[in-house]
Each structure stands twice: as C-alpha cells, then as structure tokens.
Image (cartoon, rainbow, N blue to C red; front, side, top):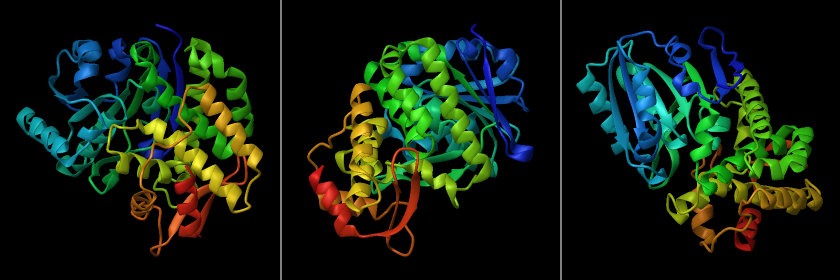
Length: 359
C-alpha cells in the first residue's frame, strides 16, 4: 500500500478524517475503527460490486453485516432505491448504532448517505468513493440526496460521514469517460478560489489525463483540502459553501433536461462552468480571456465545452428549481475571473436564456 495522505474535516465533535492512498479498501484495521456498532450494511452498485465488494466484506469479519447491490447510474438515484436500502437495513435488524458503508461513486454515496440520515433519524455511514468525482467532491461535506424527475437532489439532507476512505487504486479500473468527468470537479476548485492551483492544472493537464500517480494524488489532496476548509466554515451552505456550486446550476439543468445518464455529472459541470463564465463576461463581470483559458483547460482534459441541442426554455425552467434561488429569482455562482467566484443574486433571466440559447 502506498503512503496514506490524511486530511481532517474540522466540525468539532463531528470531525472526521479523509484518507487518500492506494490499497485502502484492504486496510480494514483503519476503516473499521470508526464503526461503533455491530450492524453494517454495504451499499454498492453492480459495476463496483464485481470489482471491490468481496475485498470490503472480508474486512467485516466478526460483525453482523449484509450488502445491497443496486443498478449503476444516475437514473437510479431515486426514492425507490432509498427504499431498497431501508428494507435491507430492516432485514439486517439495524439498530441506531448501525453503519452504512457507501462503496461506489457519487450516486451510491448520495443514496447511502441519505438513507443513513433517515434511518431511525440518523445512523453512521462511511464513504468509500471509487470514482475521481466522488473522491474530490461528493464524498466530502455531508450532502446527501436523491433525484426527482423535476430536478437533481431536490430531496436530501446534510449528514456528515464518519470517515472518507479514498482508495486511489480503484481509479485504475475507472472508464476513461468517468475518470475525465471527475477532473471537472478538480478544475472547479481552481476556478472558484485558487488561481495558483488552476495554473498548476494547466501545467499538469497531460499528466492528469495519463493518470500519473503523483499528479493525481496531489490533485485529489488539494481538492479535498479546499472543500474541507470551506465545509468547516459553512457546513450548511448559508454563505461561502455555495461557491462550490460553480457551474452546477447550469449543469444540473443540463442533466435534468437531457435525461439522467445522458451526460455524466462532471461533463455537465464542465459545460456549466463555461456557461457561467460566459454569462459573467456577458454581464461585464469578467474578462473573456478567462473563459477562454477555462475552455482550453477543459478541452485538454477531454471534457465537453459545448452543450447538446436542448430546449433553452426547458433548461431555464429547470434552473428555476435550483435550491440556491431566493424570492423566486435566479441566484447563480458567477466569477470575476479565474480564482474569483462570487454569489450573484437576482440574475436577469433573459441574460441566462441568451447564454443557454448560444450554447
């Protein structure tokens, strides 16, 4: 096993570690320590189960445990799927000191975390992300939820994990498209508040595409450090944490209107970040050169920068359901340029519509 990098999400009594390194799923002595009770349910999907489920189950010897394998994909992040988790917990006889292990990408992490937040009004869970996107974003910070036909993550809860176990060895089996989708969230951290990290990504883009171990570990650590610091200051997204949604209002609308699974989340975020940058330029808030740099980096990383042909009115309607909106008006994360994201209230819908139509 490679050297393990450790970060902490500082939330007082609810603080927890993020462990980053190859081979961590086999290191059960480490990740069993946060398990406080005797009941454990492993929630995973069909793709990940074939690769890593037995490795995790082997580490649960001596505990009363079960596992649930769900279908793979964003289309299955539903209330029905959460109901299957509740049924599995009931069959296990899971008490209030039970733990759920979320073994998979962002869909599994969000689903399992939502179920953990709801079962007996809240039980422990541990994130075991197996995708790059989940390692650098969704596994950290305690956002959980499910999708509705009307929009992404409209039903959910803030519920922090007991630990995040990011086994970077799992990235070797990640399909190219999913791996590159994760890089969009890495770019986001440079885009919103760290121009130096953005420049580092420009220098190391080729190494990241090639999955260079050193470059990848550095990028994951920097991303997790950035997110954990923001979460520690604003756990429930009443202020600064909203900046982490740069590109997401546009991206979630793209995912909803295109149909869940048509665009991967990271692909939608990549397009959405460029749309947010384009809108910022249109509103006179940022120089067009910054949007050009963003588009160039995303393209080098193999990410899309052009939206598929979708109805602009439908996209705008989906954006009106965004959880950040206030008073019935659009509240978006825009920027003043690379590393300078900001929350902008009451954005004019006709300006947003123009960007959507132009994309």
